[in-house]
Image (tube, rainbow, N blue to C red):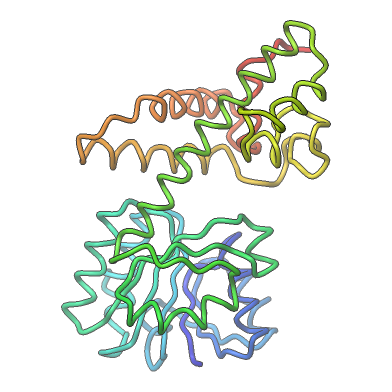
Length: 295
């Protein structure tokens, strides 16, 4: 299939590599010339604009940092909608607010283009391995069209409902993830302050009613889970700035819906303080240092 892939950052680039490995032909656009050259060496075709990338393709995929970029790439003068053909399916895999996803999809629909939102979970490791989870907001027909292509980049392709619901699923999941990581950090730090061995405490939590992913798989205390970022200096994984972004999306969506998210707002402020301390580049589990005394 001839596919336009726009946005080749830490997530987009490995996703595009997997599509090339699967035999698809890609029209590529990004501002990073180095990654464009790398993917061109694998068989990709470099485009000079989103408009050019979209022309003559059978599917358009975008993976962009924020809502402003999505609006620009899709709605701008040299954007996707200026080049995409009528009836060509499209999907945006960025993590943005649900309303922007719906607004851009509505603009696409006015040109006869069906567009889905499909944010992902699984991080850069999942993108490289092709094991991402896609949370797809689309009509059933569009979901069925997209599924075989998304399956080259992900292992779990979930139909969440109409356009925009993919973003809803993503921000609700990450809202809970941020809250649970703060909770595990509080518990682990309290246990250490009160004198219990941290491995013993983690073992109790992971086999009792406090059991959760943030403790069992991604424990923020160093040395508890060998594969967790906490055991390698909080490098890699899911950056604190990205968690802050997602919590901001969730709290803003909640404001628009007049829905209280008290715990989410507290978690957002804790990650905001972490960012202010210059720690936003660390994994989000480093939030535990909000509770630990300096060593």
